[in-house]
Image 1 (cartoon, rainbow, N blue to C red):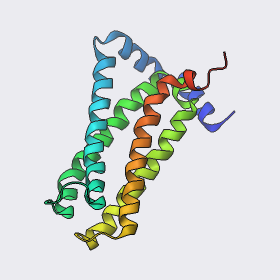
Image 2 (image 1 turned 180 degrees about the horizontal axis):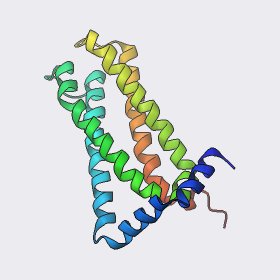
Image 3 (image 1 turned 30 degrees about the vertical axis):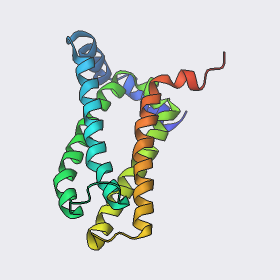
Image 4 (image 1 turned 30 degrees about the horizontal axis):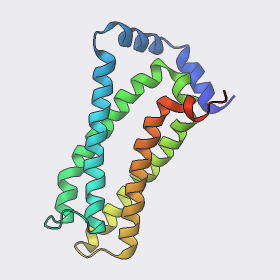
Amino acid sequence: MSVLGTLAGIIADSPLRDAAVHALGNVPGLPPLLQSLHILSIVVVICAFVVPQFKVMGIAAHRQLYPEMLDRLTPWGCWALVVLLLTGTVFIIARPYRYLGNPLVGIKFGFLAGALLLTWLLARRARQSAPLFTTAQRTVALLTVLSWFGVVFSARWIAYVDYLFWEG
């Protein structure tokens, strides 16, 4: 059994899973509330971490200084990541086999790791060279945007994995 399969089994047999399932099934409006917070946090993350990439690429925010943009938007993005972690964890705990056994979850987290790393590296380097960005920085910005979009698209397809790998 895989590591994720073992982890899913541990979670499935835990009282934490029972509590999550009970809360999601018995607290009126909790599932759509958590899903809405999750979606709104995705919007904040995209605004906070993708818009500055557009600045580096030269297609947006021409009058805004890059360091100021980062100082203003990064805290919002970081807090939104915390909300995403908390809301996503509730759903993973409630249905561990559905998520931890899903190949798209691995793809999503691969994109997420890449997006976070590229966002951090570019912000660190571009602060030093702003307002003149190199071709390499513009290329990294484009890769960062594509990585964030990969996170969003793969996450959205998690619910539809049966359609992707349907054999019948």
